Length: 284
Ligand code: AMP
Image (cartoon, rainbow, N blue to C red; front, side, top):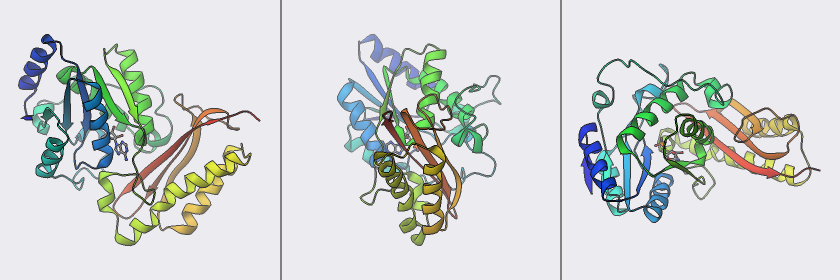
C-alpha cells in the first residue's frame, strides 16, 4: 500500500495505472475509519483492480459554527485498517495541497439542496461537490463508492457526475449500523455516554415509521409527528429536521408513494447526527 500526499504524484500514479488498463475503485472519506467505510472499501476491492482511499477533512464543507476543529482524526489507525483491507493507495493531502490559493472557481449545487442538510447547512454541498470534482480529477476513478447514510450527498453526486459528464460509475452502499441500530459514524465518539444510549432513538423512530407505513399510514405529516414525538420524549437531542421526500428527486410528498426517503437530523451536545430510511411505498 502506498500513501501519497501530493496531487502531482497521485495523478502520475493513476495515469500510469490506467495506461496499464487497470480499473480504479475510489472511496472518498474524511478518515477515522469505521465499519461503514470498510464496507465501501470491501465493495471497491471486489469490483476493481485497484482501490484508492482518500482521507481529507475538507474545510470547505464545514460551516463556521460546525465541528471542523473537533472532527476526530487518527491517521496511524486509519492506515493500519486500510492496509488490512488491502487498499492499494491512500491519498492523504494536507489542506494547503488541496487548496493552495483561495479558489478561483467553486462548484455550486443548484438542485436537491433546498431541503434536509442542504437547508440547515448552507454551502455544505457546494463544498462537497467542489472537493469531489477535484478528487475525481486527481484519482480518475472507474467507480466511486458512497454511503446511503448520506443519502442527500448521493443524490448530489449523482447530479454532479451526470451534469459534468464524469466517466465515473457511482455505487451507493447500504448504511452500516451498530448492533443497537445506531448508524456508524466517525462523529459517534463525540456523543456523551448518556447521549450514546439515547441516540438509538434515531433508528428506532425510523423503524416505527416503517411499521406504521406497513400498517397503511401514507400521510407525511402523521409520520413526521410520530418520529418527532418519539425523539423528543426519549432523548435530550434537539431535532434539526424530520422530513419526507421522493427519492432521489427530493420533492415534497403529502402522501407517500413510490420511492421515498424519511430523513432526520438531531443535535446532541457536541455532535449532530443524521439517519434515513429509503423505502418503496406501494399505492393503496
Ligand atoms: P465520511 O468519512 O463521513 O465523509 O464518509 C465517507 C463515506 O463513507 C461517505 O460516502 C459516507 O456516506 C460513507 N459512510 C459513512 N458512514 C457510513 C455508514 N454507517 N454506512 C455506510 N456508509 C457510510
